[in-house]
Image 1 (cartoon, rainbow, N blue to C red):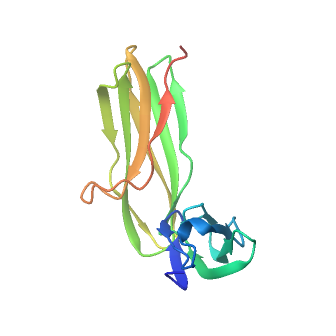
Image 2 (cartoon, one colour; image 1 turned 120 degrees about the horizontal axis):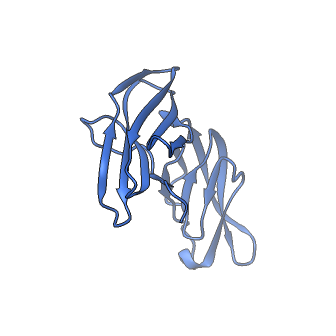
Image 3 (cartoon, rainbow, N blue to C red; image 1 turned 90 degrees about the vertical axis):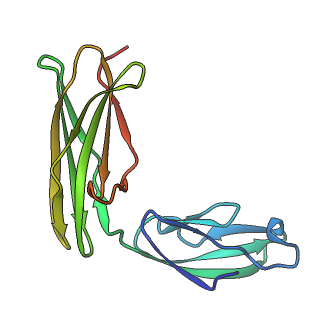
Length: 178
């Protein structure tokens, strides 16, 4: 491999390349434990959960050509699945998310965007910045009003409004049945 060992945080990725006579197309990559790290046909390794495993490169004849040790450490933050409650009678949406900080001290912000059927933002609510210390778990929550022309709600978490870096992908929720 071009790397003998890699260390990744949960949820991150890297790429390794086996050095074989037949080139990269002549090998197949496999993880010794796909619950710790997954690897695709191109050598892209994705860290799934804390632990250690190996990524092997096999020749087309099935022999081990090489291996790379993979160590996965916990992510700085573990973000739970958002809990969304929609109150159609009073046109309010409540969003709650649990966040656990594994290392250091992190500032996080919950953002909820209400969009109409043309994806235009109708209402945006940004929670106060919440500081979470290592070992702490806190709940971010926000409530936002929507109108009868509102169609979807996007919910995501940022590192803070200063850093402007998303920590989660956007979760989209339909406000009305179509």
